[in-house]
Image (tube, rainbow, N blue to C red):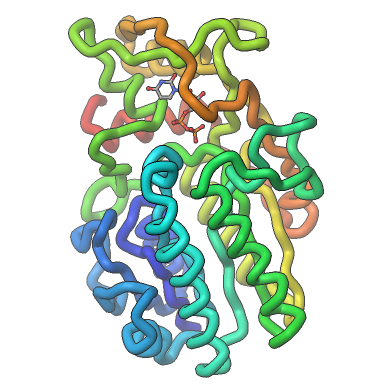
Length: 319
Ligand code: UDP
């Protein structure tokens, strides 16, 4: 069975490609390399370089595929505030093109990388899939618009779809070609920033006066390998004319200070920090309810925060 992985040259997509090949799937990759890297791809994957906005490219990429895992898209919350049109165009319009081409090719199975950003500021914690969706960024709005598009496509055209709403993805996977690591410039994510912290460039703690036990924000971190395991399981439980939305996190939260403590233990050195103002748009606490993932996918994460920090540090050649 051949799977088309859109965005397969990115950090999360390339991890999916690796695991799918290990599990015996054939894999095609469609990626425009705007934020991915061709050297992340193994030679066994068929690679089509191009954008999901081009129907001819999408058509070619879909050749021989039975299902799609759709990662391709713009994914920075801050950038989406500056460039909402770009996010709408690539994420929403690109997915529309993909779904139309899937319909023409009679390919009826899709797993989509949605986001906890669809919920916005939570009203209860942990967040269940029935929580209100009030995204606070154009990025979150595009992910929600795609989820809604998938629901309509399932009822109107028989699509079998699952949206996985990711919380904070971290960690890394080692392959024969090295670690599949995050390569953002500038890096905005907490764990790599903590690991790179030095006395000259201390990691900023965005707010230490939040209404949490230690005053710093709480997030739900999930190892990228556990995340992809959930995708493979999702592929196996897709149902025609049905769209399921499932949270993927670890189901427990860690504060920014707990992440820093974990990194100090892993690196066996103190991590310099700088107390800084709150970052715009950050909610205090974001933790997933993962009961639905457990029951529908028979999935549980198995890698803890220490493993995520250790693997990220290894991928950054800090260990
Ligand atoms: N954060 C921080 N310093 C940083 C980067 C992030 O204090 O250099 C905090 C941020 O405010 C949030 C948490 O760490 O509470 C996780 O942020 P990240 O950008 O990794 O993921 P997000 O939750 O925004 O998806």
